[in-house]
Length: 335
Image (tube, rainbow, N blue to C red; front, side, top):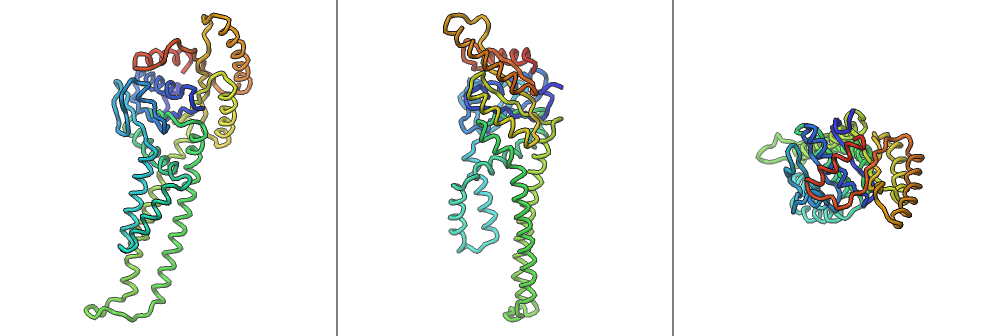
């Protein structure tokens, strides 16, 4: 089974090793094979537009080539939209005099650790669902390694956190019922003496609890579906890009251990920018000698993973024609 036959591909690796180029070329290759592809960048330093020689792609689905669309997710915008949605939900169930406090809390939340990752994860999860519905393949050009690993480990952690909120909400609902029974029957409405004020007070609480529960359950189900897809090796694969250099090898080694511990389907490594045999000169000869030792280390350390070798190109890879050529190199490498 070819990697382009999967439903979701995530391309990761250290910054500067060519993730965006590989992601873009792989998307071109898949589209050439008749797949309808959505290419998504989750890296805050977006470069998809640069790779395709476009002025802008942005946070709207943009057609780049036949069967190939792209999208650049903006982490800051995701946080703003996420918090705006939460603020609106909270204001539905609070008195107007509490609005300023809600807004203050949201400003604090915007700066809290993990806020960006949580907002991005929810958007990524929704993008995967969109991709599974409208496309044959979704390819994610991810942020550098550490950020990617945090995102990949979040679905399980956030699902557990959401379950905790559901449990807390359930306890709050039970407490509300108890308080309702204990509330004195005083303070009846003169115009409607048969209406129990305790029942009237708890009606709003019931509506709030129902809305909160529905929101949390929807998020929990979304994250659970995302987690199932990420763990399903028949539908999802992770591909790491590295260059034959010391630091990328070390970082990839740590990442591989983390991914295998999470039981995520790591499909292999793209060893990018290998010096071609025809490159000459004493400087390159010395460089090639060092490179050979790094390639030998890659062969030894990652011998249980598929390795796809791609040669260094004489010019920058930019624009559709250059990416089509790169797609041919990926195909020759076995992808």
